[in-house]
Image 1: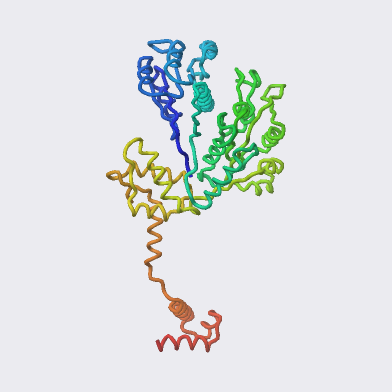
Image 2: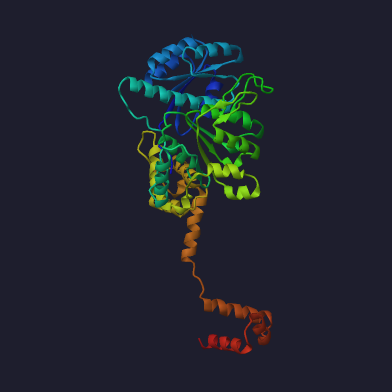
Length: 453
């Protein structure tokens, strides 16, 4: 199980090399392609060569004003979303620019958590804009959500069936399974097949939420709500309005915040930190966990009321070791995705045997990483045994040792054991029989049988 990636093309325009490197490093992922430019001239040239979904643009460039440049980009690129980079002193300019078409802005030094939110929000906004334009042009082209399920085992067919049935509804869904099995892909597939597919899918791993910031991240906050709150900020719930909120590793959420989340699910309202007013939202909730939430409820670390509220519809994803027949399909898929336009690598027969023998404690995520490593170490575009990590090779070695080792028969084991006991008691057969738990007569008969053979 993995994702069909529709690449998000992002152009970063900043005259500071360190800024370009930072943004490229932080934003690079399997579903994003990052291009950088150091000035307006390079940026304009890049836009002529490639269509970008998002342009992250510094307001102050050595050869142009970023806000003036923005208009030119919007004329050239269909539904492009502009995110402005600004220092604190230029925030007013950025806010003013949003009135003329900028999607959002980020300030130096960067809040990387906010950067992720702004980029994802911009991408979703771009999809909506493209859909509107196509509709106006009379072209009802379906914009496919960028991920789908790979795998045809009976368990994955069941997952696919359940997703197809529950996706058009608005009931909350709980996806369970070990880490790395692809719960996030199932969540994206759910959203992509839902009636909310044109609206945002907001994703958050609860394990990454800092205890003191959880409420402000989920609910947002008003300016002046606490020290450092210099501006109001929309939380995850606000961003997910009319769309889907996917909370991964829900079992990591603190009990206090669990109670607040339960109220949101029941009332579809919430109150930002520092605000006196309730905000009405329309959100479809998807949750995922690698924990046994029933045990967490029994221990008192997870709210029983919240468990019953989110456990309306459960989808369980089995670990890769229990569906190994999918490994060749997944390998072929990863090889195709990582070829980057060149001929995909192939996996040698002996290397595939190692892949099939291994138990994959890290599941599909680990398989992806192994294939990525294998491509780097491949010989003549072929992934061989030498291209694989040591732990995979050791698994096969253990199996081969087990298969070829000469095991003694039960009779030989019994004989050796009797002789060791006799040696221990200096040949005293009465003591030996007592230790072995048999009569002296039985011991004598066994010794006699060995002599006759």
